[in-house]
Length: 515
Image 1 (cartoon, rainbow, N blue to C red):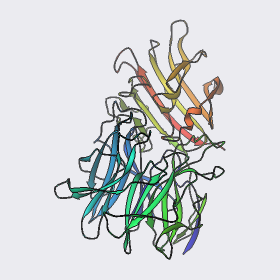
Image 2: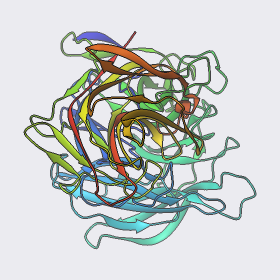
Image 3: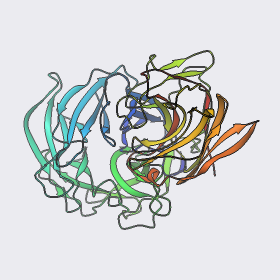
Image 4: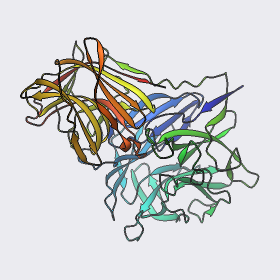
Protein backbone atom coordinates (compact mmCIF):
# COMPACT_ATOMS: atom_id res chain seq x y z
CA UNK A 1 0.00 0.00 0.00
CA UNK A 2 1.30 3.44 -1.01
CA UNK A 3 0.26 7.04 -0.48
CA UNK A 4 -0.12 9.25 -3.52
CA UNK A 5 -0.42 13.01 -3.20
CA UNK A 6 -3.01 14.34 -5.64
CA UNK A 7 -3.37 17.96 -6.68
CA UNK A 8 -6.85 19.43 -7.18
CA UNK A 9 -8.62 19.61 -9.49
CA UNK A 10 -8.42 15.97 -10.54
CA UNK A 11 -10.30 16.72 -13.80
CA UNK A 12 -9.56 20.17 -15.17
CA UNK A 13 -11.58 22.43 -17.42
CA UNK A 14 -15.36 22.47 -17.73
CA UNK A 15 -16.26 19.31 -15.81
CA UNK A 16 -18.89 20.44 -13.30
CA UNK A 17 -21.46 18.70 -11.09
CA UNK A 18 -19.34 15.54 -10.70
CA UNK A 19 -21.08 12.39 -9.60
CA UNK A 20 -18.86 9.48 -8.55
CA UNK A 21 -19.67 5.77 -8.62
CA UNK A 22 -17.66 2.63 -7.86
CA UNK A 23 -18.50 -0.66 -9.59
CA UNK A 24 -16.27 -3.54 -8.54
CA UNK A 25 -12.74 -2.09 -8.76
CA UNK A 26 -13.48 0.77 -11.15
CA UNK A 27 -14.47 4.34 -10.37
CA UNK A 28 -16.55 6.52 -12.68
CA UNK A 29 -17.31 10.23 -12.64
CA UNK A 30 -20.12 11.71 -14.75
CA UNK A 31 -20.26 15.48 -15.36
CA UNK A 32 -22.64 18.04 -16.82
CA UNK A 33 -22.19 18.99 -20.47
CA UNK A 34 -24.87 21.71 -20.95
CA UNK A 35 -25.20 22.62 -24.66
CA UNK A 36 -22.22 20.54 -25.77
CA UNK A 37 -22.74 17.12 -27.32
CA UNK A 38 -22.21 14.20 -26.93
CA UNK A 39 -23.83 14.72 -23.56
CA UNK A 40 -22.91 13.41 -20.10
CA UNK A 41 -19.17 12.83 -20.25
CA UNK A 42 -17.88 9.91 -18.13
CA UNK A 43 -14.33 9.55 -16.80
CA UNK A 44 -12.82 6.35 -15.40
CA UNK A 45 -10.13 5.58 -12.81
CA UNK A 46 -8.69 2.54 -11.09
CA UNK A 47 -7.23 4.44 -8.13
CA UNK A 48 -9.01 7.84 -7.78
CA UNK A 49 -5.73 9.48 -8.84
CA UNK A 50 -5.71 9.48 -12.64
CA UNK A 51 -8.87 9.93 -14.65
CA UNK A 52 -9.29 9.16 -18.34
CA UNK A 53 -12.17 9.83 -20.66
CA UNK A 54 -14.25 6.65 -20.91
CA UNK A 55 -17.45 7.43 -22.79
CA UNK A 56 -20.29 9.84 -23.45
CA UNK A 57 -23.81 8.68 -22.73
CA UNK A 58 -26.07 11.00 -24.73
CA UNK A 59 -24.94 10.24 -28.26
CA UNK A 60 -28.21 10.00 -30.20
CA UNK A 61 -31.08 10.47 -27.78
CA UNK A 62 -31.35 14.22 -27.22
CA UNK A 63 -32.20 17.39 -29.13
CA UNK A 64 -30.86 20.63 -27.64
CA UNK A 65 -31.58 22.92 -30.57
CA UNK A 66 -33.24 26.14 -29.48
CA UNK A 67 -32.40 25.72 -25.80
CA UNK A 68 -31.24 29.02 -24.23
CA UNK A 69 -27.65 29.55 -23.08
CA UNK A 70 -26.58 27.87 -19.82
CA UNK A 71 -29.43 25.37 -20.10
CA UNK A 72 -29.69 21.81 -21.51
CA UNK A 73 -27.93 18.88 -19.78
CA UNK A 74 -27.54 19.47 -16.03
CA UNK A 75 -26.18 17.37 -13.17
CA UNK A 76 -26.21 13.74 -14.31
CA UNK A 77 -26.17 10.96 -11.75
CA UNK A 78 -24.96 7.43 -12.41
CA UNK A 79 -25.84 4.45 -10.21
CA UNK A 80 -25.69 0.68 -10.39
CA UNK A 81 -28.19 -1.97 -9.33
CA UNK A 82 -28.31 -5.71 -10.01
CA UNK A 83 -25.92 -5.64 -12.93
CA UNK A 84 -27.41 -2.56 -14.60
CA UNK A 85 -26.19 1.02 -14.88
CA UNK A 86 -28.64 3.88 -14.46
CA UNK A 87 -28.14 7.49 -15.49
CA UNK A 88 -30.40 10.42 -14.68
CA UNK A 89 -30.20 13.93 -16.07
CA UNK A 90 -32.18 17.12 -16.51
CA UNK A 91 -32.81 18.73 -19.90
CA UNK A 92 -33.35 22.38 -18.94
CA UNK A 93 -35.36 24.14 -21.63
CA UNK A 94 -35.72 27.54 -19.99
CA UNK A 95 -34.59 29.35 -16.84
CA UNK A 96 -36.48 32.57 -17.47
CA UNK A 97 -37.97 33.66 -14.16
CA UNK A 98 -40.26 33.04 -12.43
CA UNK A 99 -40.51 29.58 -13.98
CA UNK A 100 -37.97 26.92 -14.81
CA UNK A 101 -38.77 24.37 -17.51
CA UNK A 102 -36.71 21.32 -16.65
CA UNK A 103 -37.50 17.73 -17.59
CA UNK A 104 -35.96 14.75 -15.83
CA UNK A 105 -35.14 11.47 -17.58
CA UNK A 106 -33.35 8.22 -16.89
CA UNK A 107 -31.69 5.58 -19.08
CA UNK A 108 -30.23 2.13 -18.43
CA UNK A 109 -27.43 -0.02 -19.86
CA UNK A 110 -25.60 -3.23 -19.06
CA UNK A 111 -22.26 -1.45 -19.59
CA UNK A 112 -21.16 2.10 -18.86
CA UNK A 113 -20.31 2.29 -22.58
CA UNK A 114 -23.83 1.31 -23.57
CA UNK A 115 -25.81 0.78 -25.61
CA UNK A 116 -28.16 2.90 -23.52
CA UNK A 117 -31.91 2.58 -23.54
CA UNK A 118 -34.14 5.33 -24.84
CA UNK A 119 -34.72 8.06 -22.24
CA UNK A 120 -37.63 7.48 -19.86
CA UNK A 121 -39.41 10.64 -18.73
CA UNK A 122 -39.84 11.04 -14.95
CA UNK A 123 -41.07 14.51 -13.97
CA UNK A 124 -40.54 18.25 -14.38
CA UNK A 125 -40.95 19.59 -10.83
CA UNK A 126 -37.28 20.51 -10.45
CA UNK A 127 -33.75 19.67 -11.50
CA UNK A 128 -30.76 17.60 -10.27
CA UNK A 129 -32.44 14.18 -10.10
CA UNK A 130 -30.79 11.19 -8.44
CA UNK A 131 -31.71 7.60 -7.66
CA UNK A 132 -31.27 5.86 -4.33
CA UNK A 133 -31.41 2.06 -4.50
CA UNK A 134 -32.36 0.89 -1.02
CA UNK A 135 -31.42 -2.46 0.52
CA UNK A 136 -35.11 -3.50 0.53
CA UNK A 137 -35.10 -3.45 -3.27
CA UNK A 138 -36.96 -0.18 -3.69
CA UNK A 139 -35.61 2.63 -5.86
CA UNK A 140 -36.35 6.23 -4.99
CA UNK A 141 -36.09 9.40 -7.04
CA UNK A 142 -34.90 12.61 -5.41
CA UNK A 143 -34.91 16.03 -7.01
CA UNK A 144 -34.86 19.71 -6.16
CA UNK A 145 -38.27 21.40 -6.45
CA UNK A 146 -38.91 24.84 -7.91
CA UNK A 147 -41.65 27.10 -6.52
CA UNK A 148 -42.40 30.11 -8.73
CA UNK A 149 -44.43 31.72 -5.92
CA UNK A 150 -41.34 32.50 -3.85
CA UNK A 151 -40.32 36.17 -3.77
CA UNK A 152 -36.61 35.37 -3.94
CA UNK A 153 -34.78 35.28 -7.28
CA UNK A 154 -33.75 31.67 -6.74
CA UNK A 155 -36.90 29.68 -6.13
CA UNK A 156 -35.49 26.34 -5.02
CA UNK A 157 -37.87 25.15 -2.32
CA UNK A 158 -36.25 21.97 -1.04
CA UNK A 159 -35.86 18.29 -1.86
CA UNK A 160 -38.59 15.77 -2.66
CA UNK A 161 -38.59 11.96 -2.72
CA UNK A 162 -40.82 9.54 -4.63
CA UNK A 163 -40.67 5.82 -5.34
CA UNK A 164 -39.88 4.53 -8.84
CA UNK A 165 -41.58 1.45 -10.21
CA UNK A 166 -38.63 -0.01 -12.14
CA UNK A 167 -40.72 -2.59 -13.96
CA UNK A 168 -43.39 -0.09 -14.94
CA UNK A 169 -40.83 2.69 -15.55
CA UNK A 170 -42.92 5.25 -13.72
CA UNK A 171 -43.12 7.11 -10.43
CA UNK A 172 -45.61 5.76 -7.92
CA UNK A 173 -46.94 6.66 -4.50
CA UNK A 174 -46.84 9.95 -2.62
CA UNK A 175 -44.29 12.70 -3.05
CA UNK A 176 -42.44 13.31 0.22
CA UNK A 177 -40.80 16.66 0.86
CA UNK A 178 -37.87 15.55 3.00
CA UNK A 179 -35.82 18.74 3.32
CA UNK A 180 -36.71 22.43 3.02
CA UNK A 181 -33.13 23.63 3.11
CA UNK A 182 -31.33 25.97 5.49
CA UNK A 183 -30.94 29.73 5.57
CA UNK A 184 -28.20 29.31 2.97
CA UNK A 185 -31.04 28.63 0.50
CA UNK A 186 -30.76 27.58 -3.16
CA UNK A 187 -31.02 23.96 -2.04
CA UNK A 188 -30.24 21.51 -4.86
CA UNK A 189 -28.12 18.50 -5.96
CA UNK A 190 -29.62 15.86 -3.61
CA UNK A 191 -27.72 12.62 -3.10
CA UNK A 192 -28.85 9.96 -0.62
CA UNK A 193 -26.63 7.36 1.11
CA UNK A 194 -27.24 4.66 3.72
CA UNK A 195 -24.54 4.23 6.37
CA UNK A 196 -25.17 2.00 9.36
CA UNK A 197 -28.48 3.12 10.91
CA UNK A 198 -29.00 6.37 9.01
CA UNK A 199 -29.93 7.75 5.63
CA UNK A 200 -27.63 10.67 4.84
CA UNK A 201 -28.82 13.39 2.51
CA UNK A 202 -26.23 15.51 0.69
CA UNK A 203 -27.36 18.79 -0.85
CA UNK A 204 -25.64 21.80 -2.39
CA UNK A 205 -26.67 25.16 -0.98
CA UNK A 206 -25.81 28.82 -1.36
CA UNK A 207 -25.84 28.76 -5.16
CA UNK A 208 -23.13 27.46 -7.44
CA UNK A 209 -20.94 30.53 -7.05
CA UNK A 210 -18.88 32.01 -4.21
CA UNK A 211 -21.44 31.01 -1.52
CA UNK A 212 -21.57 27.39 -2.61
CA UNK A 213 -21.26 24.62 -0.01
CA UNK A 214 -22.31 21.11 0.93
CA UNK A 215 -25.04 20.53 3.50
CA UNK A 216 -25.60 17.14 5.18
CA UNK A 217 -28.57 15.93 7.19
CA UNK A 218 -29.72 12.48 8.30
CA UNK A 219 -32.72 10.40 9.28
CA UNK A 220 -33.42 6.85 10.42
CA UNK A 221 -36.35 6.68 8.00
CA UNK A 222 -36.03 7.50 4.33
CA UNK A 223 -38.93 9.95 4.29
CA UNK A 224 -37.64 11.87 7.29
CA UNK A 225 -37.65 13.93 9.37
CA UNK A 226 -33.99 14.81 8.64
CA UNK A 227 -31.76 16.48 11.21
CA UNK A 228 -29.03 18.90 10.17
CA UNK A 229 -25.36 18.10 10.76
CA UNK A 230 -23.75 20.14 13.55
CA UNK A 231 -20.70 20.44 11.25
CA UNK A 232 -22.52 22.18 8.43
CA UNK A 233 -21.23 23.16 5.91
CA UNK A 234 -19.20 20.04 5.22
CA UNK A 235 -17.11 21.97 2.70
CA UNK A 236 -17.27 25.60 1.56
CA UNK A 237 -15.05 28.48 0.51
CA UNK A 238 -17.65 31.19 1.10
CA UNK A 239 -15.72 32.50 4.12
CA UNK A 240 -12.27 31.79 2.63
CA UNK A 241 -11.75 34.29 -0.21
CA UNK A 242 -8.00 33.69 -0.17
CA UNK A 243 -8.37 29.95 -0.85
CA UNK A 244 -7.21 28.91 -4.36
CA UNK A 245 -10.29 26.64 -4.69
CA UNK A 246 -13.59 28.52 -4.72
CA UNK A 247 -17.29 27.82 -5.38
CA UNK A 248 -16.89 24.39 -3.78
CA UNK A 249 -19.98 22.20 -3.55
CA UNK A 250 -22.22 19.69 -5.33
CA UNK A 251 -20.60 16.64 -3.72
CA UNK A 252 -21.00 12.89 -3.91
CA UNK A 253 -19.48 10.23 -1.66
CA UNK A 254 -17.20 7.25 -2.32
CA UNK A 255 -15.15 4.72 -0.31
CA UNK A 256 -11.98 3.15 -1.69
CA UNK A 257 -10.66 -0.35 -1.03
CA UNK A 258 -8.51 0.91 1.85
CA UNK A 259 -11.60 2.24 3.67
CA UNK A 260 -10.78 5.84 2.97
CA UNK A 261 -13.86 7.96 2.34
CA UNK A 262 -13.85 10.85 -0.11
CA UNK A 263 -16.15 13.45 -1.51
CA UNK A 264 -15.88 14.41 -5.16
CA UNK A 265 -17.09 17.97 -5.70
CA UNK A 266 -16.97 20.92 -8.04
CA UNK A 267 -14.67 23.92 -7.66
CA UNK A 268 -13.28 26.90 -9.54
CA UNK A 269 -9.78 28.40 -9.61
CA UNK A 270 -10.34 32.12 -10.13
CA UNK A 271 -7.52 34.36 -11.30
CA UNK A 272 -7.11 37.52 -9.23
CA UNK A 273 -9.95 36.23 -7.09
CA UNK A 274 -12.61 36.73 -9.77
CA UNK A 275 -11.75 35.24 -13.19
CA UNK A 276 -12.67 31.54 -13.25
CA UNK A 277 -11.53 31.07 -16.83
CA UNK A 278 -11.74 27.26 -16.71
CA UNK A 279 -15.30 27.12 -15.48
CA UNK A 280 -16.23 24.62 -12.79
CA UNK A 281 -13.85 21.69 -12.38
CA UNK A 282 -13.82 18.40 -10.48
CA UNK A 283 -11.94 18.01 -7.16
CA UNK A 284 -11.61 15.40 -4.40
CA UNK A 285 -11.14 15.54 -0.62
CA UNK A 286 -10.92 12.99 2.18
CA UNK A 287 -13.66 12.79 4.80
CA UNK A 288 -14.19 10.61 7.87
CA UNK A 289 -17.04 9.43 10.08
CA UNK A 290 -17.10 11.02 13.52
CA UNK A 291 -17.87 9.12 16.72
CA UNK A 292 -21.38 10.57 16.67
CA UNK A 293 -21.99 9.39 13.12
CA UNK A 294 -21.45 12.49 11.02
CA UNK A 295 -19.14 13.17 8.11
CA UNK A 296 -16.36 15.75 8.37
CA UNK A 297 -13.42 16.72 6.23
CA UNK A 298 -10.24 15.00 7.37
CA UNK A 299 -8.77 18.44 8.16
CA UNK A 300 -11.63 18.90 10.72
CA UNK A 301 -12.70 22.12 9.11
CA UNK A 302 -14.72 23.09 6.03
CA UNK A 303 -11.64 24.21 4.08
CA UNK A 304 -11.13 22.92 0.52
CA UNK A 305 -7.57 21.70 0.03
CA UNK A 306 -5.34 21.72 -3.02
CA UNK A 307 -3.40 18.56 -2.04
CA UNK A 308 -4.99 15.26 -0.98
CA UNK A 309 -3.41 11.94 0.05
CA UNK A 310 -4.95 8.84 -1.50
CA UNK A 311 -4.00 5.27 -0.61
CA UNK A 312 -3.13 3.20 -3.68
CA UNK A 313 -1.91 -0.33 -4.30
CA UNK A 314 1.20 0.92 -6.04
CA UNK A 315 2.93 4.26 -6.11
CA UNK A 316 1.04 6.35 -8.63
CA UNK A 317 1.90 9.64 -10.27
CA UNK A 318 -0.86 12.05 -11.18
CA UNK A 319 -0.88 12.73 -14.91
CA UNK A 320 -2.65 15.93 -16.00
CA UNK A 321 -1.24 16.26 -19.53
CA UNK A 322 -3.84 18.12 -21.61
CA UNK A 323 -1.96 18.11 -24.92
CA UNK A 324 -4.23 17.28 -27.86
CA UNK A 325 -3.59 16.66 -31.55
CA UNK A 326 -5.89 15.43 -34.30
CA UNK A 327 -5.01 15.14 -37.99
CA UNK A 328 -8.34 13.37 -38.65
CA UNK A 329 -6.57 10.34 -40.11
CA UNK A 330 -8.36 7.90 -37.80
CA UNK A 331 -11.76 9.49 -37.44
CA UNK A 332 -12.76 12.22 -35.02
CA UNK A 333 -11.08 11.84 -31.65
CA UNK A 334 -13.40 11.52 -28.69
CA UNK A 335 -12.19 14.80 -27.17
CA UNK A 336 -14.29 16.74 -29.71
CA UNK A 337 -17.64 18.27 -28.84
CA UNK A 338 -20.25 20.03 -30.95
CA UNK A 339 -22.65 22.82 -30.00
CA UNK A 340 -26.37 22.01 -29.72
CA UNK A 341 -26.32 19.27 -32.38
CA UNK A 342 -24.30 16.11 -32.89
CA UNK A 343 -21.95 15.88 -35.88
CA UNK A 344 -23.52 14.06 -38.82
CA UNK A 345 -22.23 13.02 -42.22
CA UNK A 346 -24.28 15.90 -43.57
CA UNK A 347 -21.95 18.52 -42.12
CA UNK A 348 -18.90 16.77 -40.67
CA UNK A 349 -17.09 14.58 -43.20
CA UNK A 350 -13.76 12.79 -43.04
CA UNK A 351 -11.74 12.71 -46.26
CA UNK A 352 -8.28 11.52 -47.29
CA UNK A 353 -7.02 15.09 -46.80
CA UNK A 354 -8.57 15.69 -43.39
CA UNK A 355 -11.91 16.97 -42.11
CA UNK A 356 -14.58 18.83 -44.06
CA UNK A 357 -17.08 20.96 -42.19
CA UNK A 358 -20.12 22.06 -44.18
CA UNK A 359 -21.32 25.52 -43.23
CA UNK A 360 -23.96 26.06 -40.60
CA UNK A 361 -25.71 29.07 -39.15
CA UNK A 362 -24.01 31.95 -37.34
CA UNK A 363 -22.17 31.47 -34.06
CA UNK A 364 -25.10 33.20 -32.38
CA UNK A 365 -27.68 30.66 -33.56
CA UNK A 366 -29.15 28.30 -30.94
CA UNK A 367 -30.09 25.82 -33.68
CA UNK A 368 -27.47 24.93 -36.33
CA UNK A 369 -24.06 26.43 -35.60
CA UNK A 370 -21.49 23.98 -36.92
CA UNK A 371 -18.76 24.09 -34.26
CA UNK A 372 -16.30 21.38 -33.25
CA UNK A 373 -14.33 22.25 -30.12
CA UNK A 374 -12.49 20.85 -27.11
CA UNK A 375 -12.57 21.97 -23.51
CA UNK A 376 -10.13 24.63 -22.37
CA UNK A 377 -8.21 22.74 -19.67
CA UNK A 378 -5.42 25.22 -18.93
CA UNK A 379 -5.38 28.85 -17.89
CA UNK A 380 -2.70 29.47 -20.52
CA UNK A 381 -2.71 27.51 -23.77
CA UNK A 382 -2.01 27.60 -27.50
CA UNK A 383 -4.41 26.25 -30.13
CA UNK A 384 -3.42 25.90 -33.78
CA UNK A 385 -5.22 24.84 -36.94
CA UNK A 386 -4.19 24.24 -40.55
CA UNK A 387 -7.06 24.81 -42.99
CA UNK A 388 -8.29 25.71 -46.48
CA UNK A 389 -11.31 27.85 -47.30
CA UNK A 390 -12.37 29.53 -50.53
CA UNK A 391 -15.02 32.17 -49.74
CA UNK A 392 -16.78 34.10 -52.48
CA UNK A 393 -18.91 36.38 -50.29
CA UNK A 394 -18.55 38.20 -46.97
CA UNK A 395 -21.29 35.98 -45.54
CA UNK A 396 -18.97 32.96 -45.83
CA UNK A 397 -16.69 32.43 -42.82
CA UNK A 398 -14.41 29.68 -41.49
CA UNK A 399 -11.73 29.67 -38.82
CA UNK A 400 -10.60 29.26 -35.23
CA UNK A 401 -13.06 30.15 -32.47
CA UNK A 402 -12.76 30.56 -28.70
CA UNK A 403 -16.32 29.95 -27.55
CA UNK A 404 -18.21 30.27 -24.28
CA UNK A 405 -21.71 30.51 -25.75
CA UNK A 406 -23.70 32.28 -28.45
CA UNK A 407 -23.33 35.62 -26.67
CA UNK A 408 -19.63 35.36 -25.79
CA UNK A 409 -16.88 34.34 -28.19
CA UNK A 410 -13.91 35.56 -30.22
CA UNK A 411 -13.40 34.30 -33.77
CA UNK A 412 -10.61 34.69 -36.33
CA UNK A 413 -11.90 33.66 -39.72
CA UNK A 414 -11.29 33.63 -43.44
CA UNK A 415 -13.91 35.52 -45.47
CA UNK A 416 -14.24 37.53 -48.67
CA UNK A 417 -13.64 41.21 -49.27
CA UNK A 418 -14.76 42.87 -52.52
CA UNK A 419 -11.45 44.74 -52.84
CA UNK A 420 -8.92 42.33 -51.36
CA UNK A 421 -10.36 38.89 -52.12
CA UNK A 422 -9.78 36.26 -49.41
CA UNK A 423 -9.05 38.02 -46.12
CA UNK A 424 -8.55 37.27 -42.44
CA UNK A 425 -10.71 39.06 -39.88
CA UNK A 426 -11.62 38.91 -36.18
CA UNK A 427 -15.07 39.17 -34.62
CA UNK A 428 -15.93 39.29 -30.95
CA UNK A 429 -19.18 39.08 -29.03
CA UNK A 430 -19.28 40.06 -25.37
CA UNK A 431 -22.55 39.70 -23.44
CA UNK A 432 -24.35 39.66 -26.77
CA UNK A 433 -22.73 42.83 -28.12
CA UNK A 434 -21.04 42.02 -31.43
CA UNK A 435 -17.95 43.80 -32.72
CA UNK A 436 -16.17 43.29 -36.03
CA UNK A 437 -12.59 44.40 -35.46
CA UNK A 438 -11.06 46.75 -38.02
CA UNK A 439 -8.05 44.54 -38.73
CA UNK A 440 -8.10 43.04 -42.24
CA UNK A 441 -5.29 41.31 -44.14
CA UNK A 442 -5.31 39.58 -47.52
CA UNK A 443 -4.26 35.93 -47.14
CA UNK A 444 -4.02 32.69 -49.06
CA UNK A 445 -6.92 30.28 -48.99
CA UNK A 446 -4.60 27.75 -47.33
CA UNK A 447 -3.55 29.09 -43.96
CA UNK A 448 -2.45 28.22 -40.43
CA UNK A 449 -4.06 30.10 -37.55
CA UNK A 450 -3.07 30.18 -33.91
CA UNK A 451 -4.72 31.45 -30.74
CA UNK A 452 -2.69 32.02 -27.57
CA UNK A 453 -4.50 32.52 -24.29
CA UNK A 454 -2.78 33.97 -21.25
CA UNK A 455 -5.76 33.86 -18.90
CA UNK A 456 -8.24 36.61 -19.68
CA UNK A 457 -6.20 37.89 -22.61
CA UNK A 458 -5.96 36.32 -26.04
CA UNK A 459 -3.91 36.90 -29.18
CA UNK A 460 -4.43 35.61 -32.70
CA UNK A 461 -1.63 34.81 -35.16
CA UNK A 462 -1.45 33.63 -38.75
CA UNK A 463 1.45 32.01 -40.57
CA UNK A 464 3.04 33.74 -43.54
CA UNK A 465 6.24 32.50 -45.21
CA UNK A 466 6.63 29.95 -42.38
CA UNK A 467 6.67 32.76 -39.80
CA UNK A 468 3.95 33.49 -37.28
CA UNK A 469 2.56 37.01 -37.63
CA UNK A 470 0.57 38.73 -34.88
CA UNK A 471 -2.92 39.50 -36.12
CA UNK A 472 -5.17 42.03 -34.45
CA UNK A 473 -4.94 43.50 -30.97
CA UNK A 474 -4.64 41.62 -27.71
CA UNK A 475 -8.21 40.70 -26.90
CA UNK A 476 -9.82 41.09 -23.49
CA UNK A 477 -11.89 37.99 -22.64
CA UNK A 478 -13.31 38.68 -19.21
CA UNK A 479 -16.46 36.84 -20.26
CA UNK A 480 -14.40 33.63 -20.28
CA UNK A 481 -14.37 33.97 -16.49
CA UNK A 482 -18.02 32.97 -16.22
CA UNK A 483 -17.76 29.99 -13.91
CA UNK A 484 -20.96 28.21 -14.92
CA UNK A 485 -19.97 26.43 -18.12
CA UNK A 486 -16.36 27.10 -19.14
CA UNK A 487 -14.94 27.92 -22.58
CA UNK A 488 -14.03 25.70 -25.52
CA UNK A 489 -11.61 26.23 -28.42
CA UNK A 490 -12.22 24.84 -31.89
CA UNK A 491 -13.17 25.22 -35.54
CA UNK A 492 -16.29 26.40 -37.33
CA UNK A 493 -17.76 27.25 -40.76
CA UNK A 494 -20.68 29.55 -41.67
CA UNK A 495 -22.60 30.59 -44.77
CA UNK A 496 -25.39 33.06 -44.07
CA UNK A 497 -26.43 33.20 -47.74
CA UNK A 498 -27.15 29.54 -48.43
CA UNK A 499 -27.81 26.57 -46.19
CA UNK A 500 -24.83 24.20 -46.52
CA UNK A 501 -23.40 26.58 -49.11
CA UNK A 502 -19.73 26.43 -48.09
CA UNK A 503 -17.17 23.84 -47.03
CA UNK A 504 -14.05 24.34 -44.93
CA UNK A 505 -11.18 21.86 -45.07
CA UNK A 506 -9.15 21.25 -41.89
CA UNK A 507 -5.88 19.33 -41.95
CA UNK A 508 -4.99 19.29 -38.25
CA UNK A 509 -5.85 20.86 -34.93
CA UNK A 510 -3.57 20.93 -31.91
CA UNK A 511 -3.78 22.23 -28.36
CA UNK A 512 -1.02 22.47 -25.79
CA UNK A 513 -0.76 23.99 -22.33
CA UNK A 514 1.58 26.94 -21.73
CA UNK A 515 3.23 27.93 -18.49
